[in-house]
Each structure stands twice: as structure tokens, then as C-alpha cells.
Length: 287
Figure 1 (cartoon, rainbow, N blue to C red):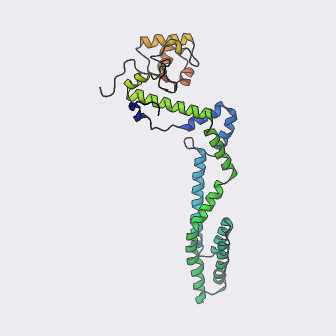
Figure 2: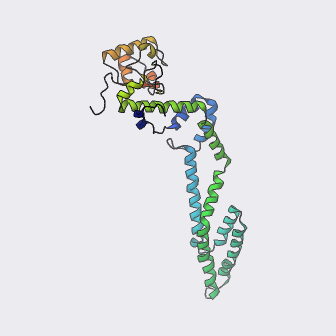
Figure 3: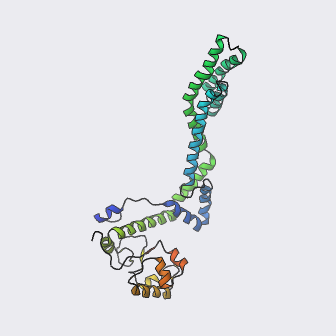
């Protein structure tokens, strides 16, 4: 995937979180933020993609409609069976269901017109309640599927899907996501196999044909002049970092940059995802 070295295989199976990167791209590129905003207004969850949240709501709503459709003839003792099938006939545009709705009108009328002692009254209840209830239970799944399909074809949902697809295919977003995943992979290699990290020169630009670590910078190993080229840094700030890492035998976090090298907190926070703080004397795992 990234190199032919077999030692990399344990690190090459993780997925990345594209949602947060998409949010960053949307804020940095106002033109693309319009489509992103269309997606965001469709849901309230921060860690669940809003369009997927809306789809779940559609599935939930269609399930409720299907259950209500199946239970209504039983709840109303068969009196609303014709109404239930009339609704299904209109929803599914089915003349057969319309014919069934018309047929169920006959026993319902009989239930109103006949006396309870009349034997035909019992047959009317049986047809409207039992037969109609079982029939509704059989038709309910198709009604739910129709409701789900109609909701998914809504123009707003189609627009949101198109906007998300457009953002996902954006080359800037794709590049950012790939670099973020490479940084994640590189950090995992550093944590699990420091010797391999040394061989790959992770966090140390300027070593020729090196492993692509997504632009990580090892604060404790790179030249001070390279630190000065980082966004928000200047030569004086980089020099203070160099002095601090020598004095404390390496820095361990962005907090050390702020405390020991007087780096502004906003600069340290901005670079947190790019900076790496490897100990100067890594101890291989298991030793």
C-alpha cells in the first residue's frame, strides 16, 4: 500500500474519519460550504452524518406507518378497514387495493344496518375485522416500503445527497483526508515500532525517497531552520524550541512548546496534528 516493507502490514487497515475533515474544508472554502450547509441542516447529531440520520428517521417513520396500517382494522373493530385500504390504494396507486377498499365497505355498512342478533351481523364483523385485519397485516410491509421510497425521492434529500457526493469527490478534501490517514498510520508506526519509524525517517523531511508520513514534523529531531518554516513560527521561536529540547532532553507535547519555548498557544494548537514528539532515546517495545 505505502511501501513494500512487510513490517508495515499491521498498520494498513484503519479507516479515517472524513466528517471532521469535510467540516474543515467547508469552512476554508465558502463556495463548497453551501453544499455542506445543506447537509448539516438535515440533522442535529455531531458525530452522525446528518443525511444518514435523516435516512434512519425515514426508516423509523415508515415502520411506524406500516405498524399503524396493520393494527388499525383491529383497533377500530373493523369499522375503518375500508379507509385503511383506500389509503393504501392511493399511496401505492393500486386499483386492486381500491377494489378491496370498496369490497370492505359492504360488511361495514352491514354492521351499521343489521341488528346484532342477525346471523349476517357476525359474518360482517368477521369479514371487516378478521379478514380485513389479516389482509392489512399482509399489505403493511409494502405500504411501509412505499412510504420509505417516496420520502427518499424527496428533492431536498436528493439535493443533500448530491451535495455530499460532490464534497466527497472534491480533490482538496480527498488530499486532506489522505494526508490525515497517512499521519495516523505514521503515528501508529512510531508507537508500535520505533525502529521501523527510524528506518522510514518519519517526521524528518529532507531524507530523499522517504516514507510519506502526511507531513509530520518530529520536533525533537528536525533542524531548527525547518521549524522556522512552519505556519506561525519565526526564526526566534524556532531557536527557543531548539534550546528547550536540548535543555530538557527533548520535548514531549505541544504544552512543552508553550511552557518551555514560549510558543503562542494558538500556534501550538494549530500545528498539533502535524507535530510529532518522539523521545530522543526510543525504547523498542518488549525490552
